[in-house]
Every structure is written in structure tokens, then in C-alpha cells.
Length: 184
Ligand code: S3P
Image (cartoon, rainbow, N blue to C red; front, top):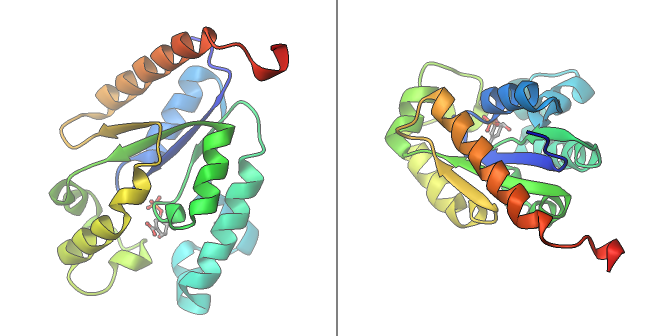
């Protein structure tokens, strides 16, 4: 299938945006970008180090700049960090640049997926399960900005990929009927 729009993956930590994005990029012959990797490359620091040394505000500002740079690319898949949606202006910008797909999962599933990793500063303090619940509640409404949302809780990796491919196919079919504004 040829998909000529950008695909932007958003969603909570541990929903598989990076792994899914990489696989889709291979399948659809697109370039893959990840906002966290971009931030790490630009600052020459891991996300944890950046948080520890300069705090969340500085991280968010680097993340915002990274996403604004990456979203200008064509024919790509962009996986975003779970918290970038806190900046509503950037979400709107992304929505203009491609199809936005949100991956979600129940808190217990997220807990199982992230509990053995310590690379996410926001999840490294206090009670992990409670922190997940609190952050999810705080962000729930913001993830709804996506064009499509997939609850991955009971899906395996291949099912997630298949679901996205079918969404893209539908999206493509629907939008083929709509003339591009420059042709009107
Ligand atoms: C964050 C999510 C992380 C990373 C940072 C903050 C968040 O990315 O950007 O630790 O605020 O949800 P992933 O969603 O890829 O884990």
C-alpha cells in the first residue's frame, strides 16, 4: 500500500509507539523519527540525564523544538514522547501535517510494560501504579486530539500493525474522494 501522508504516533508511555513506528516505517517504506531520540541526539544527553540536570521544563522545550523540526519532514512516521501533548499548540500543528494515531492501554497493562525499565524519569518516583493513574487522568482529554485511537491492551504486536494498516487504508479511501484544496 502506498501512503503519501505522514503518520504521527502519540500516546502514553509504554504503548509501543517507537516499536510500532519502526515496523510501520519498514512496511510502508517511510523514514522513521522519534522525538525522544532527536532530543537525545541534539542535547547529547539521555532523557533521564536531561531531566535530572535541567528539569522537565527544559526537556519540554527541547521536545517541542524537536517535534517542530521533525514534523516538517515528508513521507515519514513520527513517534512522539508521551507527554508532548501537554503543549496544545503543537498537537494542532501535528494534526495539520498528517494522520495522528493514538496508542493507548489500560493502566495495569502499562504498569506491566514499564515496571522493569528505569529510563522514564516521570515514572521513577513514588508509587509506580498511582503515578500512571495520575498522569493518565491528567492527560486523557489531550490524547483525544488524535484522528484515531487504538486500545492496544489486549493486542499483540502484529495485531496493532494490522489495525493501523487497516485504518490507513480506510483513511486513504475516504480522503481520495476529497479534492486537494489547490485543485478547487
Ligand atoms: C514522557 C514520555 C517519554 C519521554 C519522557 C517523558 C512523558 O517518552 O518523552 O520520559 O511525559 O510521558 P515515551 O512515551 O516514548 O516513553
